[in-house]
Amino acid sequence: MIRYLSYFAALTVSAAAVTFKVERMPNPSGVDPQIGGVAALPDGRIATVFHRGELMIFDPAKKSWSKFAEGLQEPLGIFAESSSSFVVMQRSELTRIKDSDGDGKADEYETVFDGFGMTGNYHEFAFGPAKGPDGFYYIALNLGSNGAGIREEIRGKWSDIGVLDFKQMIHDQNWSKRSKDAGRMYSRVPYRGWVMRVSPDGKSTEPFACGFRSPEGIGFDAQGNLLVTDNEGDWRGTSPLHVVKRGSFNGHPASLVWREGWDKGDPRMLPVPELDAMRNKETGRFPQGDLANSPTQPVIFPEAWGPYAGQVLLGEMNQNRMVRYLPDDVGGFRQCALLPMFDGTDLGNGNHRLSFGSDGALWVGKTHLSWAGAEGLVKITPSGLDKAFIVTAVKLEKEGGKQVFRISFSQPVAAGLEGIAGNRFSYLYRQDYGSPKIDEAVLALDSPVMAEDKKSVSIGVEAKEGAIHRLDLSALRAADGAALEGQVLYYQATKLP
Image (cartoon, rainbow, N blue to C red; front, top):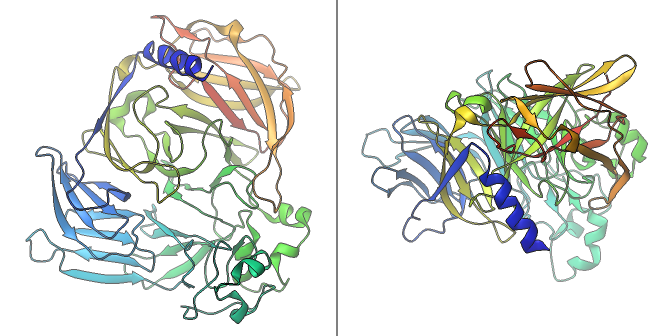
């Protein structure tokens, strides 16, 4: 059955008008090819940081690598200020790395920001930077994990809020007996589980928002909204996508201890309904195993991508695909539809860091860090974009007392309306790791109504607040017989109109 489904997926994708050329670049010699960050430069070269500490430049014309810097501590993101100045997110600090004499190698290392705590816990990754429309850098800090304790030497203020005291948190041979009391994920030093806002010179910094577990993806959409993806786990029934506002709490309580004026003790012990009422709800959710397992960096499609231009693409670590994001503002809240992208291609998994080149090519840095994933640098070039048949917008509206999905397309729909089907489900917000699907039901859909130009369809639906609504559009065809690129959409109805 698995082989049959895979073969069918390949057939349906091959019928699509748009195609994607996937090319794997050679790896640099003597370097562990797990990539923590990618930045396409204006001259066509690609700046890349590797997990084990190298910053290297790839020349696509020559298929060759040159070393710019080394000795970095687990860098998981890079921003190119120019072709000779880069801002890199190391585990321990945000660093500006420059070549001031023009010899192609770094000679200046400037600490931009290191005002966050570290305990030595293995899970204290740091992600970013993403540069906002305000000119500031935004970074995201992982929580510690009770898969291990802390070291005797820490950086930053220690929080006494927690079942275990400092000495009990130190990892030793008896850690397994105490690990449960630490909390599955913890924030005992500032500002684990927070997004931080940092000026380019590092002189102005701000704890921007809290409530994150492992915020692997951070970036901005075309309207300047800050997007953060998190990973399934405790307090994460499935992986969420948040539009993050200043001062917001985004669901994982551990980091609340660093909120100014916090006086409610151990936030893990608060009643779930109280935490639920406090939190900034998900803009979107990635159904675990169905759409994604570990979503990563958001980036904006450039103009060269035709009907995709201005939309947001999100990486995905554990599946042979990425995910496309289509926002919908309902009642003052931005929610969205999420759709698979690159299904049936030779993309592979491990899609960690993304950057579009000046020619429109998409560069993908892959990693696994001993979890699921891959490694190396990949280039994706689209063709047939003028004939691409894709969903371009999904809106949930109210008409005559009923909820209606309005789905827009890049090409007229020629056939398959009668084949549209759907279901809905949700996930629990709870302290346990992950959640089963709950409130599953088949969607009662009215007969689709086609717009005059055949480029949008309206479907009456009994939508449920808070649920994910899955619509299967695989039966739809364009006039040339092409199937949709991205045949299933998952709409997060956090609010109903």
